[in-house]
Image 1: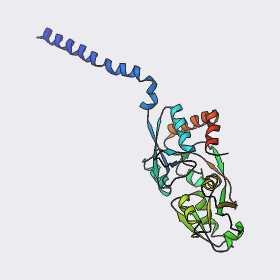
Image 2 (image 1 turned 30 degrees about the vertical axis):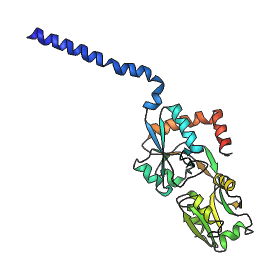
Image 3 (image 1 turned 60 degrees about the vertical axis):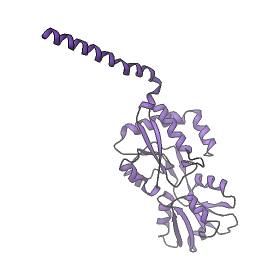
Image 4 (image 1 turned 120 degrees about the vertical axis):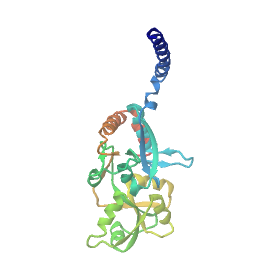
Length: 264
């Protein structure tokens, strides 16, 4: 009986050994697919669209400066990227509750946000501007002190600055908040608002699409650094993103991206 049991064990052992060879063969064939087998990082983008950084084009494809940048970084650092539109005012809570893993969508790395998220190294500096109809002769000071209606995308640094500004002595304007800058710009030509606040790179993109508009002036606000946001406990991803970002900014592709999306 022992000899029979030994023989059966030997047969089973050989069978199992034969079965285990299949994954080894697959691993050989999949060496070039290491990235595909790695972690998928979900990037939260502004659900209302935030061109030229991250938005969904007419064909339904997610595109933009930050979209292509993080995809390039992912390929270099061994992870895939999936993009998920999220309402901007809820995007940090979505990160905190692990519905997304990173925010690469033109986010200002403010001190307030840094209390809740971990930022990558900064990659771009922006200022805040006011956009009006081209025939508007109002000065920036008058816009802020004469009871005008100013549109802004809720949850943005621009919105926070204007919320604080309107409380200061001498300031008099009504702040109208929208889900996206595009919605604000739809109301500007028809007179529902007198101006729309946004950052300078967004304004550059807006003026390409809205011919009857101009930049009235730059807010008296400090410039902001753009960076990518991650959870504070995701140090590994933060390290990979910073390493990849450094490689990207040293690569010719970085200048190609800036030229493609008109970001200087």
